[in-house]
Image (cartoon, rainbow, N blue to C red; front, side, top):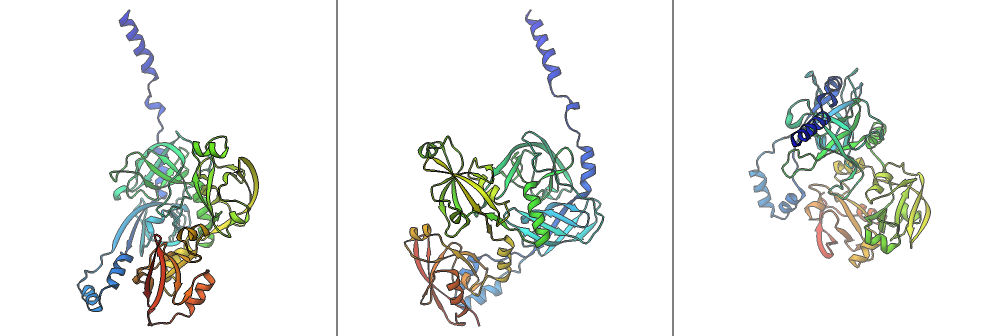
Length: 456
């Protein structure tokens, strides 16, 4: 009897195991799609860091000259990545980080034909860049519909990991809508998470569904070793379509913006605020004169719905608002003092990333700075009445040499206090050249003095 039971179990289980006929065959998809996937090689000249410039600027001139004479020539930096043709007339999509700072961009196809590419536009916040080569009648790829991707679906990637041309890897979608804030705390991409093997060099390559349409652009991995461990992240086509459209029309990307600092709502906070459960984005601060303030959103509100789309976690808010065209009036629902309140907010505009890049290439203003307003909450925390925060410092600029850095709050230049950007511009226009100018600023809650000098 025991032997019969074992035999019966074996007979039942074996046919239920996965057979080769039930697994997808990617060969036809690869044959059709590979000609439109490209390998991207870039050349750039490494720049010295602001810290290096600041330290060197603090040395006596005789030592600076000696240091410059003994420095080794800077070697060009070479990087590689992937991309794919989205228009037969030569438009190619890749990652921003693949071409960021590149002075030369070479695009290579599977037939070994090569072209020099130029950047139409590049967007740091989405990590996407649009390139153009002078060619026609190229094989191109189509985007899938944005709502077709599902957890558990088969997906396939083509790219050039470690320079190995046109490698193919496959897996499944592990999750969608992943929030991965950048080092600047920005969070505008609801990433697709997969277990597809993605490595260095795959960046910018396409992620396909079984219909051969692009559902994502491979962007980054999580790995304690530097190699693939089954945690890969791709930019969804909902973001890519929006960014590509704006880059093609204007070369830059403008996003919807509320102007709020937000946090997640946990079980205890939900209970304390009278919410049905953990949900929404808790507003910890509303920026002065922002779209949120003008629309009636207050500190302490819990945003639970925007434009008829539910906000389940705080990370959902920038994903949704970022895709709304600035100037659009949208309905917003918030929990306030345990009750639902309906508001109407005219979405503001987040500065286009190319404006930041353009400022960088210009070297910022006369001091090499870009400044922004400081919220009343931040001013109160610093126990000051006014000031302007540094949002950009150009390498090698007078401000960089003086030791000023990102997030420093400048409160005084010369004998003049800073209250707003218009006043700063007036002060800036009248600063003398060739003589030291006193600047008072706050960093990490501490007040400092330094001097800056604009060269003749």
